[in-house]
Length: 136
Image 1: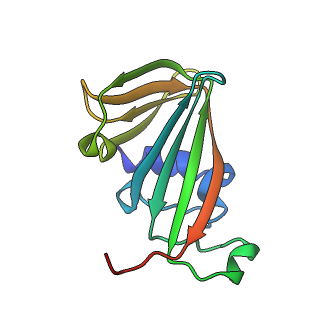
Image 2: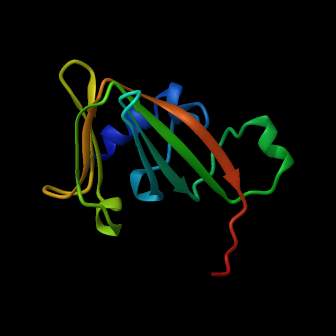
């Protein structure tokens, strides 16, 4: 994935841009850990976790200790939804590309495997900070 596509889409002020002063974490700094498809709303929610903490944290986060940040992106108006297997390899291959009509083509996995769809919109659905142990 071209870093500029990730940065432009996720770094938008309506997504993570406000929390990171316009410099959201790079895709390589984020781990995909959650995918939920909801056929009732034609939506897909994708969750990421990162150790790169927001530079403009929310006020309520000052009351807790944390060293990790997770965020969920909600893709709406989903079409062309395909699932062709899922595993650790697919979770490491993430690609967001804008296509004509301001839609976003999402690929979670490579050619021939993973979860792939097109969405008419994307928004930040949920955020959470937490304290992760350094000890396995």
